[in-house]
Length: 106
Image (cartoon, rainbow, N blue to C red; front, side):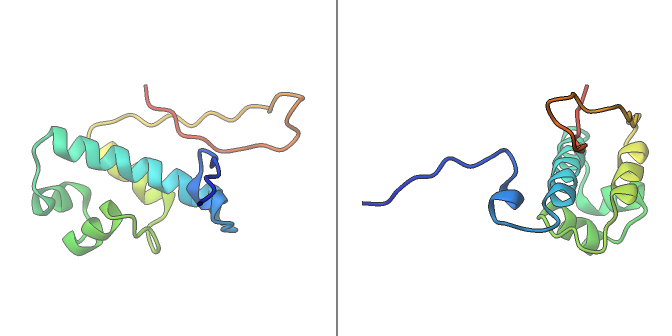
């Protein structure tokens, strides 16, 4: 019989990746970019023109291939798709001494 283990909300952390937080942020941003492209009924070619990125690179990003694409570029993509991006820095609660990075969509 197979044992089932409950994972966290970050698959990259569950896989033991050292860049888990960064990859989770990129995955979240890429999912939102994909969602907006679909909502606007853009082809990948049209979207790549709007985003200022080659279509093959956009295709890779939308399939989870984030290497070579910075968070800054992904935030720029959201701006180019007509979204405001706010970055908020605050102290963590006392119960969590280390900071964390999360993405929240309003």
